[in-house]
Image 1: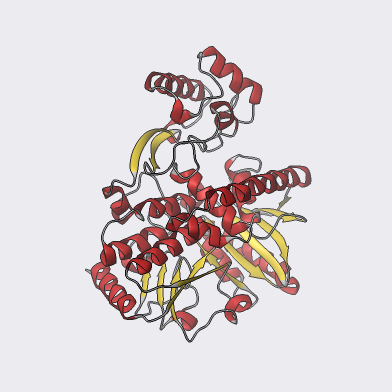
Image 2: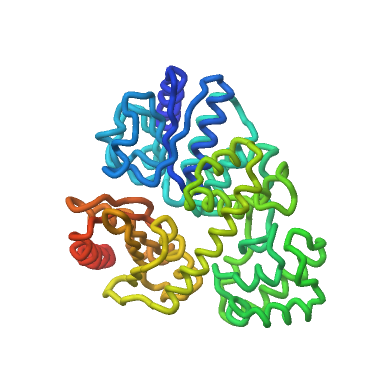
Length: 431
């Protein structure tokens, strides 16, 4: 009942808007959401503009035309004093319940794990124009924000369409575009000892199975795929790997070109991240809305991968400072928009001990960009990074986000206080 009332109120408000401006985040979920709302309003001949931003705080406040009819997607819930009279479609942990905020948590949904902003945006889109090809980007955003798979509840709405196909198989990244040898080499969640990070062993493993290493997972025949799945699970089980996490449901977009990153929802999310994190969010919006910008996005993806690889090299060489409750990584070179991704890779690939969260810092123009990453196991122990970031930054910066992934911005002269606060907060959360 609450869900329906809130949905109808927000949809009614959107229909009333004149000259709307969509303000969205620059990550995969934000760009998916922004593209979904833009395309929906284009279909209604409302001709919206889109403004992607890195964060909603004092550093971006003056850039936003507050006298316009604004629709915030994938941000806005943390600043109700600014966004109260505007439409907000968000899944981050909210502070208040303004009238035109369509927030997962207010609707009784865990926005950190059960639905993304793109999923909420698609529900609104469906209400306005019915089911459409925007179901694909809705799932892409969910994968970008690591919504729990298999999708359940309201997150399953896009799966009702012909534009998303549910598949069962290996859940490792790169099924559509990476050679299988490379897919296995970079398999990290869960990590497979003797395969993950072992290039020569990957080749040998595939050679023993008589499977061509240059094929992609999706290009294998049904028999080959079954043989690979069975052999890999058997190999991993002998090494204590939680094999139930290796196989499962994932999603492809059958209308997208075979062999492209846009066909697999996980790979599409990385393509969007590359656009947003490298200062070309408009390319990501174009991908979502159907513009011919794929080749430009591919160039950004190559840059993205190269810089992430350099970031991981820096982390391995430099190491982390071990605080009582978390790993601290201070980067000298990683872009502020990438430091959180590097931290997440380090945690999932066990470059750092996964029994503690990782806090990564990168210098920004006016202070420090802080990114925190955790795991579901840490969440079970009480760690909530989003709440910790918000509390630690109170009075000295801006912070918040999800329970397993969150961020903050902290001025130079307050960073030590912030980091000490985090230690105390994490200790309290787990006591």
